[in-house]
Image 1 (tube, helix red, strand yellow):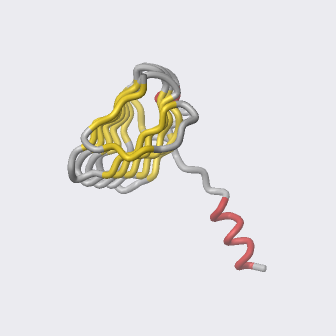
Image 2: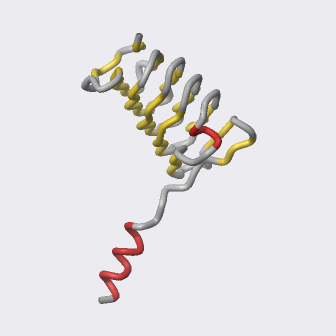
Length: 128
């Protein structure tokens, strides 16, 4: 019984949002961040996932994400969004409108436009 209670409690812990000042947000080092419900969930946000982070969630229009330092970014961006993936990071980005993804040679990137399947990206890609 005690083991089951521990497992149930562990599975219910929500992923915290990043720390934000206005619409500029950053995840603390070596943590997971979910931008849903944060200042980054709206439009015109800048998010830094730069220190071995695991970032997820959905942001609106004109969202700019910097994924570096061995971080993993699995996110959905609105129109005019952009992601820079570098420093041995892994990025899996879905765009609901026009957006761009730049990928350094030491990183792994995948991009999906709308409901389409994810495609591997080398150096960069964009959705119309």
